[in-house]
Image (tube, rainbow, N blue to C red; front, side, top):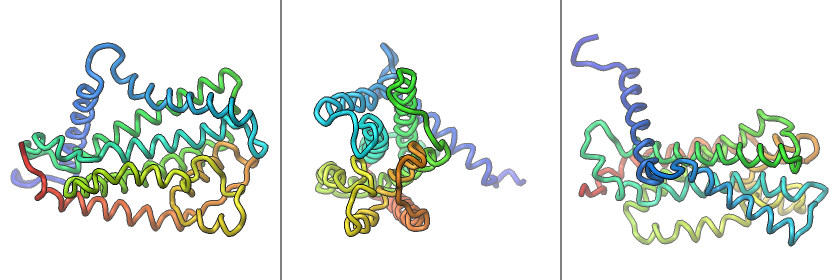
Length: 264
């Protein structure tokens, strides 16, 4: 290899180092070096999930459609937390991180991926801690199919990553879009599949909600958790179309937004 050329592998290694450094920077800036640091990244979704479980158990009883309400909340609220964290974090992320772009090796893509990676790791760890604690206490059952559960979790993360990239780009170019993101998230919750299963709905409603790719993520996740104890509906082929389109549009948007970023 000539001195003036670099291999794709070398470029990937540089980008990986950049992302790792940015993740550590985000950790220090967000949680600091004192007290419990990164543990707060885990405690935030953990406390919210446990709080919802307690409230729902008191107000709605222990069972729903023949399944433990605690497990319905666990399998609904944790993927929802992953979705919300990975789509909230990119809002105006480039504007807030603009000084980093003075370093030629750092790109908007690095900034976005580092933040989304941090949110993914934190929420995934919270899921493990919540389920592990409840399982040890005998409150929830064992996971029936770990492979499907992990696939459903990864599907939600992939979908959130694609939407997060689009959100990062449009909120950089439009202050109006910045104010509409969170209302949009709240509007989508009732049709996301977080707090219902497709099997509970009439046939006409099943066809409608399955148009939402988020529903497929929840159904796969719950198929992994409950196994044959629950009837689930999902279509990997349909989801794959969304899984290709959203990240493609998102990455293209991030690539083009560089001209709109004002270095401070």
